[in-house]
Length: 78
Image (cartoon, rainbow, N blue to C red):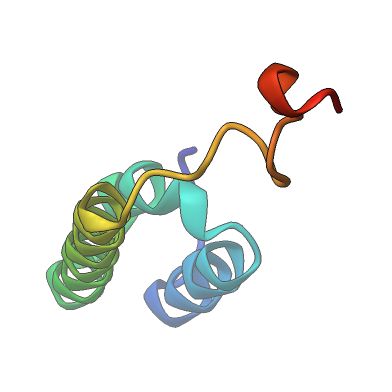
């Protein structure tokens, strides 16, 4: 993603791509000036921490029952 444009136009283009496709943040940061690289890297780190916290909280919950209802008891004749 090499651009031959004015610096302000380059920044606008990169920011537009990042807003539309935040998943391309690392690729966009390769072309970005240092200030935008810092912003993108902070965004990526923050989202990674939130993802890890979400994953950690999922593992701390009680396991879900295999049956949403009580299975029939063969001793009662059900």
